Length: 458
Image (cartoon, rainbow, N blue to C red):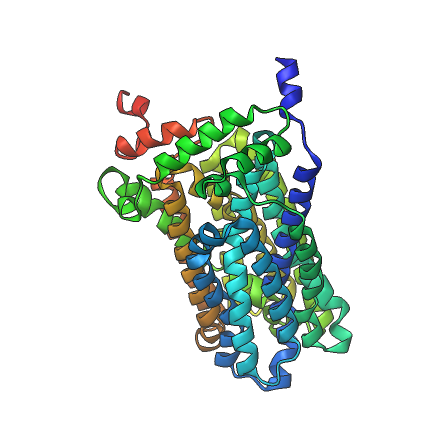
């Protein structure tokens, strides 16, 4: 038994290279999401942007993500995971750099949309590449590394923004991610494609050799047989099945969860928190950005803690705790605006909201996406969740600043408070507790009308 465990921990140099590459991609993704928050403080007066145009420039990247994510599966299946990631790295480098050369807001909007296309493809293909390439023994930790790297990238963006605040160069803030994009392009060039894609394209011998390199202690022939059987089974599923028959409730749950992740307001905080803090009394742009940077550091810590406790607490308690914290934070922000409280209270509200989100939704949403369906519907379920997630993200990005100006802070965050209550109720009612359940058993939960078989007998 001990010998098998030791074999299970074998990590090759290729695995290390995959992990490093995935972490850098995650950092770039997070940086490109977070950098606009600092840049807006200098971009808005430079281009004399209206509230509407500020929202358009900010949200263009989200709209691009929506289109990129929608096409990612077809692109990666056609040209391969590796070639797709090469295109992503080229897109990151080119479009991040072009942001800094923008002569006007419309050029910047188009470039950010194209950057969003690259991001949308990466958030589908990079985790898929990790999942298909990593040994079973470290697959979970590699996926966690990608998620934590993404959140860390947002935090890095704020501190870079603070460091460059004295220059007031929004162009430099937005363009810096082109440098790590070039580095990751060099790393990707050294990586192979995945065994799953090779088998999808009839390259069985190459796939067998690759599996031997990825996990030397594994029987590559047996793994090839398992992947081929899995591929054959997955082909039987269809997107329409998500909302038909016994899986209708699962489809509603996953799509609803994806929508609620974003509509409850996390990217209003990510994109606009320095602007919010500056509006409530922090006059220094550097101070506003640094405060927001520490908020994101707290979010990273919350994410790490969630991954440490989720297998003891369970999925539902962890997620509900995080949503409850988001609701409490919204209540604090409602009072802060209503009573014209000092900026400290607003900062505390933003801090608690970010911690709650990263502890709950940020850590578990993709766990539920992967655990809520049988194998043949898992890809379609993840795609449906991501689409609804990005749609809600786009709505918040476009509407939030206008709502804050027209309705005021109390009513705007009051709406988010109501949405947090709706979210809590939705999760409490529909979310299964998958802790300790084999993935194959998930099918029985939905077949049984959203109840585990043993619950039906009590």
